[in-house]
Image (cartoon, rainbow, N blue to C red; front, side, top):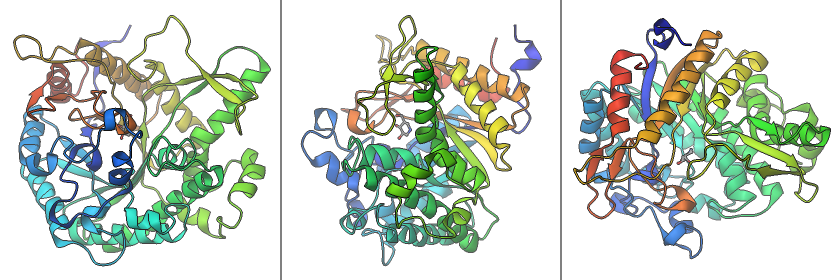
Length: 451
Ligand code: IFM
């Protein structure tokens, strides 16, 4: 049983919520914003559920002041959001768009006026379409254009923003965007996927240097990774090896270069093939620059040997008798496993933060206008208890961000998945605080889990 003292988080623990530009901003072509690959992709038939797009999303671009007020009501000390590259540099390279920069300027000022510390992510899937047309992430030049954009942002906001995130979930962009094709730009080409992944990591390191060079106050610069404990479906040797292969490609492929400065040696043969010509001398030294690591955790994966699946020879299973959300198994101990594993295997000098954690479960307004999302509260409570367990085991976890502040556009799944602490009526765009939001607010105020 947990002691009352065990329910308290360390002093100075960072509490927050996270969002991303394309998922909430809307105003897809306002004030000189250029098209991103998600504007293009979501408008092509068959790519998103119900043909949903982020054209309007939840109109945060026009309602940011109301949203910041709601954050303040929740007592949020920090807010993690992303900036849209094409708002700032409409074609991805060349001159900045002053009106786009002005928007982020206003947002940051509004946050600071409410004593909310910004955590700014530079890239959350929305590559400028013009750069895609020039080859996208498989083209090495994109990494340098990203560093230019990072420089522009740090020059403009680096007097007020301390905490920077270069990329959110680079392997999602690499694999879902270039291998399965479920995400923009919808490519299905393994070589493109690996090269995109490498250039995303390279651009992280280049942007790290660009931010340091331009920011007026000393920045802390991180990256957020989607990490998933991979479990074998049985005790068989074949399943164990299948799980190790999936782990290599979904976790170690980014953790190893970022925290060890090398790709996993076990992948040498595959990477020689896939990164031929793309991996330059000195790249791994550039990639290794990191002040803090953001861990995005949602679920585990249970896999079995399947010779028909290319590369990994492994396929997913869904263990029976477990609880599932609309997207994944609900598996809180996976967060403890992940945090302790990172600490044990890498002992990073970079700080560790849980940068996303949340759940899509059906919810809605009750007769009295209240949203009673008990399952989300249970999910958050159980995962926070695992964070505490990791802290007690000696892992220096510095903070935790709920995904997400508001219900929003869940990529290819459209608006069907509600992750928010705040309910959004997609007709009127009215916001309603959910019970989970009130609950989280109490956790933040107490710096502890309630009994
Ligand atoms: O909505 C996404 C977010 O954009 C990135 N991390 C996972 C979330 C839930 O799927």
